[in-house]
Figure 1 (cartoon, rainbow, N blue to C red):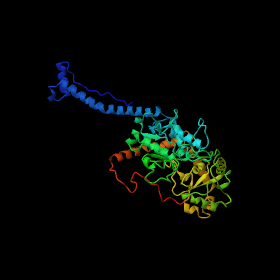
Figure 2: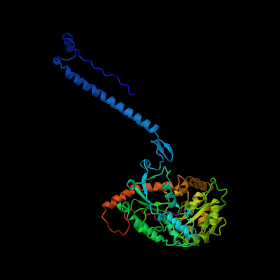
Figure 3: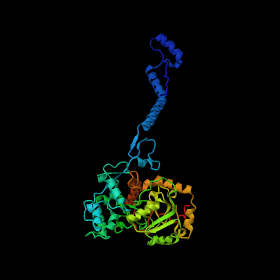
Length: 484
């Protein structure tokens, strides 16, 4: 507290005429002989107030500063992810303070059953399973749609970047939980019987017809709606009618610039299909230089695979295996990735695949040979620290790839592995602070841009454009030759 000395005023005595006269003549000049006591009191009071004003303001500011300091230091803010956090310290330095203070309100449509659990039933029946009482979503690399659906249906969920609301009027975003990737493969039978009356194309059409009747869809032309279409062909028939929404995809390989954009869409990791490596970083138990297992013959960008097989399969410390997906193939892939220093990731029919994320959780350094790949969560992950990138032309030069990798020192490999261990929770869908949480984070930070585009729509004159306008951000087409 600031010490204040009392301010004293010496007033003239007015009690009797003799003393008054003496005091007045000695204190005031002769012109003050007609002294007004009341007026003097007012003047002195104002003088006292002016004199007190500055120290009073300083005292008030001092007290307020002390209160603010103790309030921020001693009154904590509870964060469901990290427990109690001091308000003066951000929960995560990578997340802007404005986004930490509140989560985005999201409404999940209560779609007719045929679009969710009905798809699981149809898939199971097409595989010869007539018992629909014990159904579960089948394990595959496109399980993100199931994990997001389950998360929003979890009554105990907390600490997420999005909060589910049951009143659509309160929502800022709308999630459409159609199992579009599973629906795509529920059609054909693989040794089973075709599900009677099931058609993925009809399901896509029915979904859009249902949405177009919803007032919240019509309100902003679907821009505040979120769709998951992880398989590159999911929603292919109706994509032009839902492209305004936020698309959760794992690949831009089949999406044109007039449909997909890094501005509005989110890149998801595939669900890894082999077990995570439980050991520590190190190369002692990794005898192979490089490992690959998968289909040798692919179309489009995947034609490079056959060339790589021809170049690499005769190398002594390189394992190249041709094989389709099966339980035994996953077992062999798990063993190969856990015992190799590098894992080859060439493009397939599309630039990305679950093999990349299998490698990361195996602490096997991915060697990415794909000139147009987009990767998930690049705002929080620097992939140069966990993977090696090689352009296609260099990779198919005989001897180039193995010479490059054999030149990588042990210390550098350990650095790759250490960094992979730090970030691999981003690729674990079962981790409470893993993939699902980060997907919602990525969705939540799209909201300001969604609002921007909604407002632009309301004032821009409609016109036909040959190319996408400034609301589209296209990926870098120049690239780099290698990161080593």
